Structure formats: C-alpha cells, structure tokens
Image 1 (tube, rainbow, N blue to C red):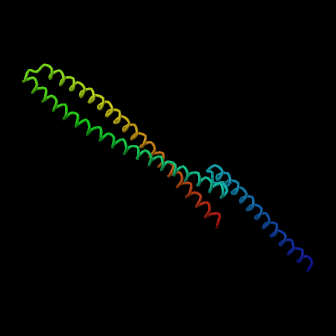
Image 2 (image 1 turned 90 degrees about the horizontal axis):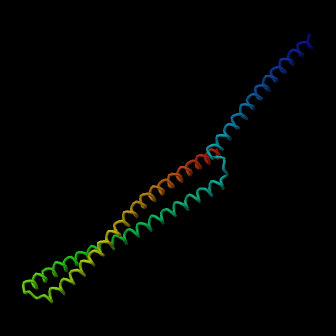
Image 3 (image 1 turned 180 degrees about the vertical axis):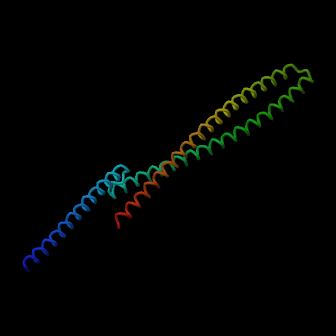
Length: 184
C-alpha cells in the first residue's frame, strides 16, 4: 500500500512536471514568434542596424545638413551682391535721367537761340544718353530676373534643408529610442 501511494505521488509529480514542461515550451514558442515578428518589423522600419551604422547614417545626415547650410549662405551672399548691384544701377539710371533732363533743357535753350550746330551736338548727346539709359535698363531687368531666379532657388533650398533636418531629427530620435530599449 505504501508503494502504491509512492507510485501515485510520483505519477502526480511526473504529470505536474510534464504540464510545466509543456507550458514552458509553449511560452518559449510564443517568445520565439514574438522575437521573429520584432526582428521583421525592425528590418521593415530600418531599425535592425548596428550602432556604428546608425552613427554613420547620422554623420552623413549632418554632413548633408552642413552642405545645405553652406549653400543657403552662398545664395544669400549672392542675393546681397545682386541687390547692391541693382541699387547702384538704379542710382546710375536716376543720374542719367537727370542728365537727360538737363540736356533736354539745354536743347530747349539752344532751340531758342536757333543755333543749328549746337542743336545737332545736343541731339547726338541726348541720343547717346538715351542709348546708355536703354542699356542700363536692360541690365537692370537682367539683374531683376536673376534675383527672382535666385529667390526661387533659395526657397527650394530652404525646403530641402528643412526636409533633411527633419529626417535627421527623426532618425536620431528613433536611434535614441532603440538605444534606450537595448540598454534596458
């Protein structure tokens, strides 16, 4: 009878151990499935990179960001130079217009004196000044077109700079989250 009780106790313990083993195997299988899903999602999102790969990617993004900043500063410097040139051209245009007015006034004086020779000389000077004014106006229009073009490029470069900066910040944030999880 004692032997029978010992056998029953051992059988119960064996059943308990089998159940525990089955439960542990099920949990192990579940963990393996979860691990595979996690690895797949990490690869899909791009998080399955090593720390060195993340550092390299961040370094590349920073270099891109610095490059765009330099480009932006160059465009701004070019815009300032063109604006200065435009201002100087406008000043010279104003001076030439004043000179034309002065010469036209002189022409009126000469007409009143009925001096044909002086009138022809004044007319040639006026025509010369008018041609210079036309040339300056053409240069002024050209400068204005260049400024519009550069302003349009500046807007595009600003957008690209902002997009690169956002991508870099997003990747840095993801990397920090991933690093925090790995440290745990």
